[in-house]
Image (tube, rainbow, N blue to C red; front, side, top):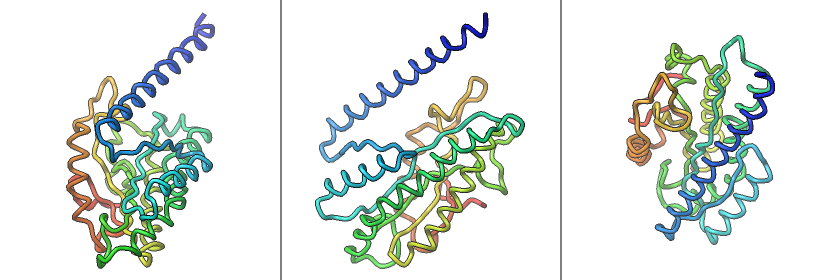
Length: 236
């Protein structure tokens, strides 16, 4: 009996997910209608063709100008333990959380370089040219944030890898005038950030406002660093 119910449960879950996506799309359209300077560009972080197409769209929209700020925010989590982790889950999470930011950064690099070259600002800053990778303190090997609430092994490993990618980008792109930084947005009340037994303490608005306050303060000395939404430097 239970086996016959599984396809129905999966169909129900897919319908719920599609409904959420449709709702988010409508929210974006409403936001764009209120702000004429906001352009919505579709991008699938695990699809190289989609990434290249998005970069082309953005380049056309900029009309010869460079791109000052790239925020790699896409992320997924699977609630697996050490015992239940699988190669498929590890590959899926890495594709979105690590490979995605790498490919997106590569695709938008020419526009970031153009912004840096066209700027008269000295040093590094987010107003000149910057890559901001949304990481997580769950990827801190020193802190191992919230282990008692969930092992989420693939997620933790992917965020540790994203931190290393950020460090590599800081070394590779500093000469081009591009700042690279990893940011922990806090434990936020999003679709990923809660569970029936544990409610995330931080609202989306509080996290975003904190990040927006931190980004203008970043300079060359933070290049390649791992910071929180409050501006605190976090350990690797």
